[in-house]
Image 1 (tube, helix red, strand yellow):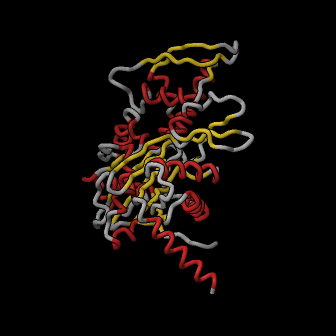
Image 2 (cartoon, helix red, strand yellow; image 1 turned 180 degrees about the vertical axis):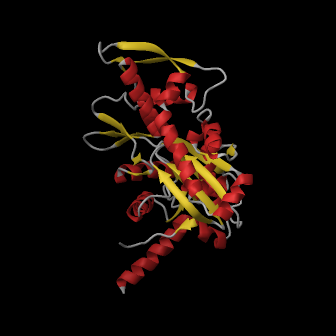
Image 3 (cartoon, one colour; image 1 turned 30 degrees about the vertical axis):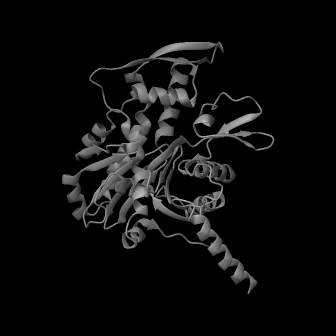
Amino acid sequence: MLQKIFKKLKRIFNYVLGLFSNEMGIDLGTCTTLVYLKGEGVVLCEPSVVALEKETNRVVAVGEDAKKMLGRTPGSIVAIRPMKDGVISDFEVTEAMLRYFIKKVHRRHVLARPAMVIAIPSGITEVEKRAVKDSAERAGAISVELIEEPKAAAVGVGLPVEEAAGNMIIDIGGGTTEYAVISLGGLVYAKSIRVAGDEMDASIIDYLQKTYNLMIGERTAEEIKIRIGSAYPLEEELTMDVRGRDLIAGLPKTIMVTSEEIREALQEPVQAIVDASKATLENTPPELASDLIDRGIVMAGGGSLLRGLDRRIAEETGLPVHIADDPLTAVVLGTGQTLNMPLRLRRRLIVPTKLDF
């Protein structure tokens, strides 16, 4: 009896707190977290990084401030990324990061208890889904719904996912690349590979280490990828000065690298992304595959901005490939638009989760 009364009081309390909060859509990415606030749009875009004191586990910085500390912290502080390959690798740190972002977008309102729609990779397990929900609820969410990233991206770029026709989306994030063919609001076929932006950065680090005995950090590798990285030969090849530490002499060193070299370094992850695109098409029902001849493939996510990747996929699949107008925000815009959908369509997009195992 007392338990029933407690649950009823808790529901009333949460409802009252929910009045102080806006509904939120979250793209909880390996590299970047974006937040959509209902009625306001995308209000936050910060790195998924948390800086902690080693001895006390006290949070020192979150987001952009914490990213600046990567590779530059003293011995007493560690900067970590609590998301790995699109899933939670550190439960408590993810909770602290989400709590910080909730307070920030609600202007530090202590009573903020928002309802959330969170985008997740399509290939994660029920346990990993539950970890996302638990982290968000413990961080202050009044309710949590999950949506697969390719569905959210498709909605975010404006594809007619509710129609009885094939729509193919490729979402290249930091930890995973998501592939999906969507029709009538559901995933006809979905594939998720753990090869994406982080894998590209790691390939650049390995290449420079093996070729030049030069050690660089994650931030430098990402900068190289953005400035001169490519998946297809460029009309005018680029060069860049790279600074790092000489592994033999142990001293700072500067070298010049070319876009041809970086393209060679990126060959393995790029080929894996292309091969998975072809595998997705091979598993698409014929009727929907014929729709794709006209509609083509839409690419979203930060990884889709790699020069020539769209052309490389188009050449190897024989289909037109389009990059979303704003690929970086496609997923979070999709979560936000889901908040405004009629319940009938929303239920078809949201992932059903098991509450008990």
